[in-house]
Amino acid sequence: MGLAMSRMMNDRQIWMIIPTYYPVIGGAQKQVEGIAQKLSRLGQTVRILTRQHFRGHRAGLPVNEMVSDAHIRRIYSRGAGKLGSLLYLLGGWWYLFRHGRKGIYHAHDLGAAAWLAVLARLVLGGRCLIKMRTGRDRYEKSYASGPGRWVLAALLRLADRVLVVNGELEQMVQELGVAAEKAVRLPNTVDTRAYYPVRPNEKEAVRERLLLPLGKTIVLYVGRLHPVKGLDILLRAWAQLPMNVRDRALLVLVGDGPERFALAELAEQLGITESVLLAGAQRAVRQYYWAADVFVLPSRTEGMSGALIEAMACGLPCIASNVGGAPDLIQDGRNGALLASEEPGQLAGKLFGMMGEPERWAEMGKLARKSALEYADMDIVVDRLRTIYGELK
Image (cartoon, rainbow, N blue to C red; front, side, top):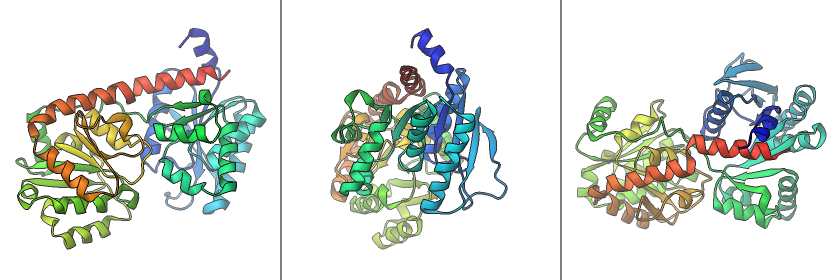
């Protein structure tokens, strides 16, 4: 990025607009936190505009707070659904009117955040980016009707840039009439210096700390326990594996969510509880990547899975549904395996093949990390984002 463009960008405040933020931590929040921290350390002023929810947050959550080198401003938004979103939109615009003119307004997903960014662009003389961060399937279901599709198209056309996390979203945006030069594919990112492979002896030490078996193949899933993640498909596929294969393996599900009890019941019904561990939410998620041999992501729909990128950065061969950003990262048969979603039989076959070839894990893991480094490394993605900001004169 040129010096003049860099100086021009640094003259503008960057406003990350995301409705739900710290202390709620999910994939989107981790992305914003990591990028904001990196930009701040490069000398860029970053502010995060979010909602001051009154459900699910601890009492006394401050209106202003510094987290990871970025200033958080929480906008009053008491009320659920449309009322809370409307209060966030109006309160956020008023705050930007007083404190954030001529900024770069970077909305993370559609809805109130995107409309707030567009409104600020139109009235306050700034520039606007909208990030579409989930799967095409979700957007098509939410905006399937004629009026809904028209509103979505109008919203995206009003933005200076539309950031998409995978190829299928890029195609969708162009189908909605957004100019090709305004649609930019920018994947989610990972700090590859924090997520890296470990040596076999280190893997054993990690397993001992986590009380995981040393002599078994560990297949890992990390993420929400939610229907969209296809974990019921995974359990049915696991049940189709020969018993002697399951006896030598452990399927570890790290995460929590509304499907937790249903998945435990399904595992019991399928007779596979001895080889399935519901580990719950974990703070030391990185250690589970280090302990695992294979990563699996059986999602029905995805944007760009942060867990998939983290697993690949840790050198794990990955099996994933051919949705969202997975085909952008995985070359089937080289650094992992792709399969159709909703196909437990096909997933069972991929698991059986991968688990039966441990001699290939190291080479596939090297290629997986190479893909993560080239496509989603934090430094590379943030540098591309700074270039995009700099283009918005």
